[in-house]
Image 1 (cartoon, rainbow, N blue to C red):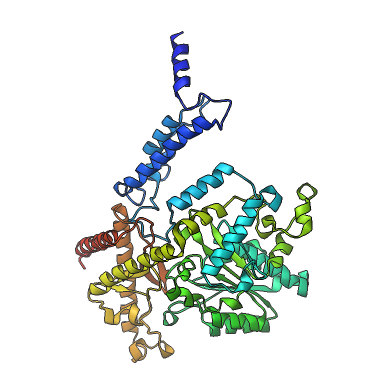
Image 2: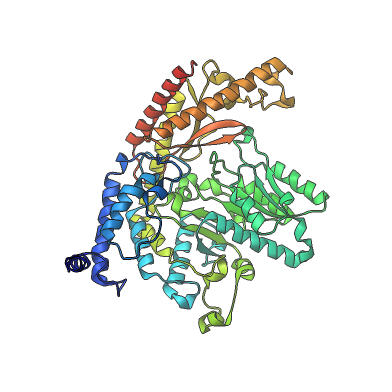
Length: 542
């Protein structure tokens, strides 16, 4: 009897007393407030957590039960486990000391829009399944397109249109499939094995993955080499040469992905010149501006997408640098019918008068999946709640903080900026003592000791193998030094950065973009870098 009374009291006061109504409004209100309070406290205290999770692989399985509980558990119990067991395994992307990869910004407006989307829980695969979901998406995509000054041909107000995908990976795959089918309708499906896809060696790996999924022969994927001389952007001349070689070999150029803000160094491919080459040979040109596209709403950065009028499609990730929570990839196309012809389905159970009228958009035919979320709500909230002026200020503040960090790097003779900063990412490294900036990679020396000049001669003095070997060993040593430095910094939990390797050189990437970041965090981060550099240089006897 005591046990029954105890269980009765527990059921009466816990969150699982309404087991017959999983959406009881009052219980939803109570638990919802708890979650909001939990998250508010999380952001209030986020700087107390190590930015990079310090757990070891497999930590969580040791902490949680081996199987699902048979009886319900209270939300209070579950939240306590989040605090005790989940948070230690979280890398805090929203921390103001998070400078890794690219940012994944959030905002109150973005969160609230996401909450509404999740609360409504509509599955807006076609217009009739939720007209507001379709129509709001079309509207916000035109709004954002106009903010970016995209040509009208990309907007619904012209003959194009926009769609919210999950990620750039999906956007590239959808456009590549559309390009593939468009080409095969002209040349015949028997020529599928001849199709060639082009990018640079700095293009995101999603292009190669998309090519593989789309059935492109792996040997027909071209990652055209870039050099430091062009700041690792794709050379139109190199592209043209690669295309001509393929045509001479009997292959058929299909698709080019140009990037504005590459992942490693935020390099900018020259869209205008590349679009001229693409037009000459009939390639579909997709512009991937996943990271840097957002900042193009600022007039002083709009020039980086000059020439976009020559592209077939353009995408950016609002969930990276635009205060809109994951996932929210914005894709615009000039010819929506190309997507629709490749991706549409029309089974009997989805037929309806609105679709038959051809007066509505059915977004299921613009994407890979059938089901889709009401993503436009959160983007609409962000656009309205912050407005163009405040969004521009937000983006500019990050660029200015990156400039501040860049200044710290250049003022310390032990460090160098490896490639020019374009936006809010600084690629830098510490130099091996005695190396000196005058002889460093940043001033033309490559990892084999050769300059980027004619005939690969070292410093213009001809082949000096001893000199080459010395430079090669020096670069290898410097790479290892930077690996150790980055690992030491990240293990501290005070700052989190990531790296890349460009031209054989290991660089640390300092990516400013967290919503909560302020100048003081950038200043602290630089002090952390210096302190750990001091310790390593001493311990390694440099």
